[in-house]
Image (cartoon, rainbow, N blue to C red; front, side):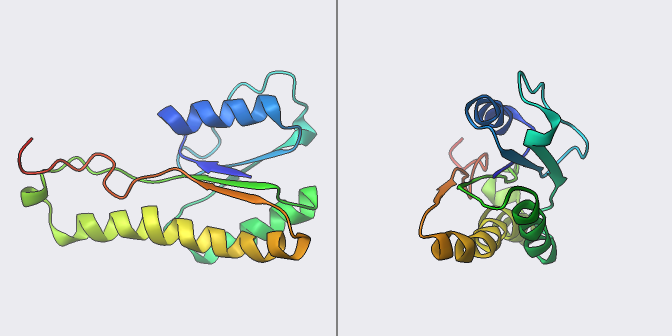
Length: 141
């Protein structure tokens, strides 16, 4: 199960997962309906679910849909997140709240939804690739 925005690193890594793994679920946090070229995969191998990391109430439902479709989650690849392009001294508190809401709390909540399934199976991997300050400039830049 790979979760990422449809931009840059997220898109590249999702394409790699698609080529390496037969059963891949894509959760696009942005650009609903966008699906990358899927190479040799068949439609039954891919499930695309739109997901907003801010909407934590949807995480459990998405987890249930994935488990119903594929029966298991082997890897949760957390790569969704947002970046803000402000100098720290120019950013208001809402900028920081949004970074925390999406990049931290969204990732933690989605992981908490998947973790019980992995613990029950006594296997699974969780990979987290995001940064709380991805593009936030400091005062010296």
